[in-house]
Length: 235
Image (cartoon, rainbow, N blue to C red):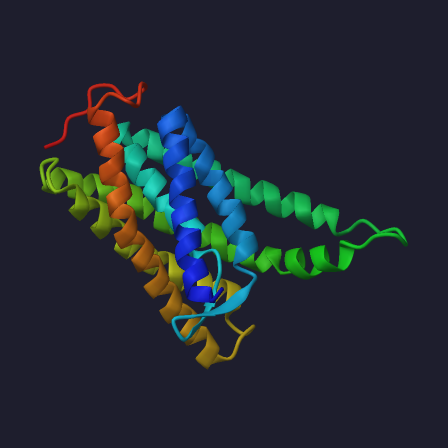
């Protein structure tokens, strides 16, 4: 199975998970998904693959779904709930980084088989975590602010505008900050530029695709299938 097909399958699986969480648990499901997406993305990003002819890192899909989750929280609940979700994600990244750095300090036994792999993956984590934390806070708080801005400017209409406009700019901020902090000097400049370009492309594909997910979520809300959403008004 080639990487491109796998990538689209992975995107569908990610959407299925987040929509299941929202359908089953509403606000709590979205809040839980944020730390999951942050932790998984920071592990997957250590793997490089070729996608659409470009050098790319994994983790773009699952990380991009964190923006979908905060947009859904802003749309169906409150701006404060979206900010709370960003805080949960930040805490998850800090906790994972600290705990895994402590884990790799332990001297492995002679029968250990996972130690070298853990050291290889999580030995990169401090720099990746710093880049991820900085990019995460800047991009996600911008996304929450921008979503509210576009919702006010459009008077609650045109859901696709606030969903896409807020996410596109936030993805630019996230990609520039994370890639420069995490990988500058690690890869040659040509590879670094390819990673940036592919990251922009892949995240924007996910952002465009997730528009259908937020419309599905709105359909569920209007059909009163999400029980913890109250007083939702949208044209």
